Image 1 (cartoon, helix red, strand yellow):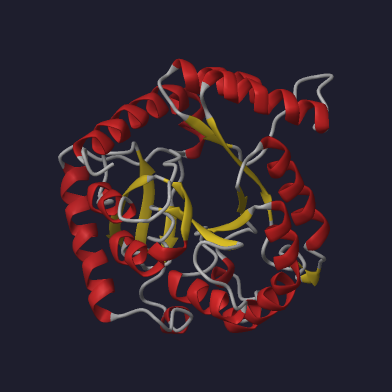
Image 2: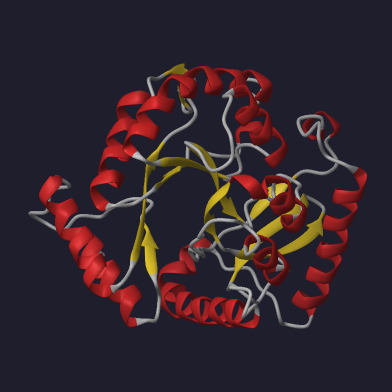
Length: 316
């Protein structure tokens, strides 16, 4: 769907805005100043908010781990966001780094990221845009807090977090605890629900329709509503399965902030997940099936999320 079709679909199904991760252009369309102006106008006419994508925070080609310059791409994304009247640029740089032995150590990556991002502060501030680093199987909330300290950043400024309420599970973080830790930095969201199991391969996590899984979205929304700034809830859903080994001691050492209590809570969640799956109330969606389920499940997730938000009234 081209970006205008996406806006029409969202407005037609009761949504209030769109966070674009990427833009699929139809034949003849060019992502230039005119298209951005037209997109901003179309969103305004439909009463929709816009958040933008295209940001990067890891200064490497993660296929080869050769160094790259983040500034040109981040400047382009920030300028596009500014032209749209958007204040958020989501940044996503890969994922599952510590699953690959070729990946540099996490603390080394954090230092390199800080060195690459600090000089970009003035650019983001001048354009009035926040780089929202997504929790995307790359770094834990503990590690992003260390990154922000290394960047001399403050909550509500040029750096923030796109809180994905599911993606923390493969990184062995409880979604509620992770939200509490990173809360002051949350400027954007991917509201996503999921299931959790333990089998011989380890901790198995998988997305499910929002409101139909084990992620305590109600408690998380109750935390988010306490923020002293407006926050958009952007629904995300997809298929797939993610496995985190639990019997590999060397792998678990790559999570130095993991506590026994948080891991125990995840195991308890996984036991509940097994019960729900055995009862037919929870199921894995393979990626290959997602195209046929996408539209219907997104509509259902949107309705469920709207009900959750309504249940928080009048706080929201």
